[in-house]
Image (cartoon, rainbow, N blue to C red; front, side, top):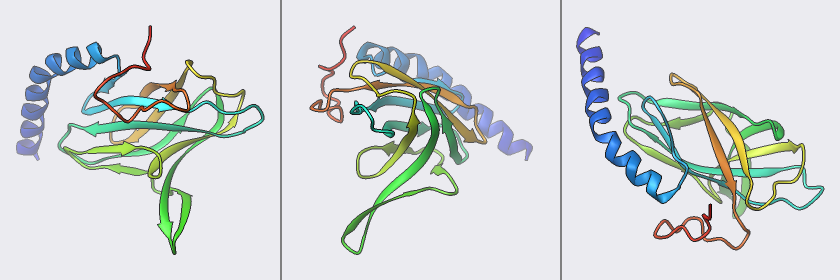
Length: 172
């Protein structure tokens, strides 16, 4: 156990030595990345919702730089009555969306992308529509890691947000 703790400490120290360069690069791209401990979240975004639509979506990329698996078990936002973690999958040729009852596993040293037709957050019981250009705070609750608050940037419906080669939709 002591040896494992020493290895974890050494790993975290090596990450902290590397992270200033990564942080500077991410900051230049304005992708709104958040880092807490071993967990890094970036490219958090959503889509506008028409008036009267009670649900919105949340997408992002979550990287676990740690030596142990962590699990995203819940999320909440002041803009939604309830936030759940969903997975879209194909079943008998039909697209099916279902909540992940046990949360979303982020393996050690891995990145999991929440994106259309895959894992995503469902923002249910919206207090008001999500408007293009605004940012929506969402707290991510992790098991075995600190919680992180991210800001979903509401992108235009026609934005190519998955193309990381440029950030044309990010004006400040």
